Length: 113
Image (tube, rainbow, N blue to C red; front, side):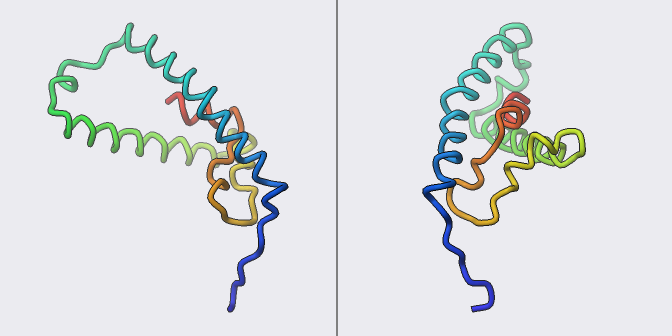
């Protein structure tokens, strides 16, 4: 009753957000995987990590990637990177694709590290 939900102009916003999500899945992720493949041919993981049991490696991966994503997202809020990130915070509504909204530069800055 206090904060009523506003209707989202889906026909106007969904194509851009869906396009951003598709671009991320079909362009950014393949490029990042290509770069990872090339980087780890030169700098392989240490044997100490590859020798760990799979559940431990998965836990390390989840903590490490979440830590990296959190700090990259924080860096996006600095004055130097905000221009690449502000589109992510531009929606004045909440719906399932609003969080996928990201510029190309932001997708690479977050995806590559």
